[in-house]
Length: 328
Image 1: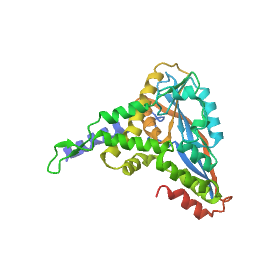
Image 2 (image 1 turned 45 degrees about the horizontal axis):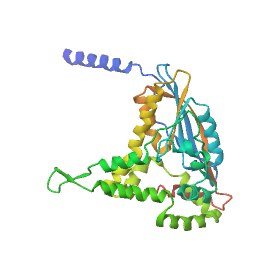
Image 3 (image 1 turned 90 degrees about the vertical axis):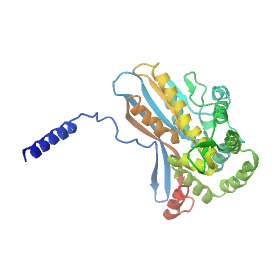
C-alpha cells in the first residue's frame, strides 16, 4: 500500500511540474485564417482579407506583415494594400513571371487577354495586374520564375509502385506534368479553346445582374485551404499531384526563404512585408511562429469584394446557396 501511495505522490508531483511549465501566452495555439466572409445584410456578403503584423518574441528584429493577395478585387482594396506596402521597409511579393523583375519593369496595367482580367471585367472588379504598382525600389519578387517551375518538373522522376510489390518503377514521365502545367498556364492567359469558352460564359455573366451576383457570391465563399487537393484532383494522376505541390508548397518555401534573408538584414522597428495569395499564408504563418519565433501582434481586415444579393433580387436562402456553391 505504501508503494502504491508513493507512486501516486510521485505522479502528482510530475503532473504538478508539467502544469506549472510557463508557456508564453502570445504564442497562438492555432493558426488564424487570413480571410473571412462577413454577412452585411440578409442576402449580402463581403470577403475580407487580412493584413496581419507579427513581432519577434525576443523583441529584437523587424516586424513582419503578411498581406493576403487575391487576383481580382475591388479597386479600393488594392489602393489600401498599396498604401500599406509603400510604408514598409521591404516588400516581398508573389508573381510567376519570365524574369524576377518583370512586374517592376511593366508597372500596373490592363492585360485584356488574361483570364483574370476577363473575369474581373465581368464582375465589375479589377485584376491585381491593374491594381498594384510594383515599381518600387523596396519591392522584391519572392516567387519562382516560369523557367524554374518548368525546370523542377523536367528534373523530376515521377514514380509509382509495382503492382506485385513495393519496388518503384518509372511512372508518368516528367513531360506529362510539363504538358499539364503548360495547358493550365494557357488557360490562365485566356488562350486556346478554354479562352473562347470563357469569353462566351463571361459575356452572359457581365450583362445579367442576378447571374453576376451569384457568381460573385460563389467566389466569396471559396475556401483556399482545399485548393491543392482540388487542383491535384482536377489535373489527375501523379503528375497532377506534383504540379499542385510545386504551385503551393514549393512556392511557399521560396517565400519563406525570402523572408529569412530580408528579416536578417533589417533592424528593430522596421517592417518586412509579404504580399502573397491567401492559399499560401497558413503555411507561412506557421513557419513564422514555429521556426522564426514570431507571434501575431494585430490584424487589419480589408474588404476585397462585396456582393449585394438584395439589389440583384436574390432571397437570403438563394444567396446562401450561391455562397456555398463552389465549396460543394
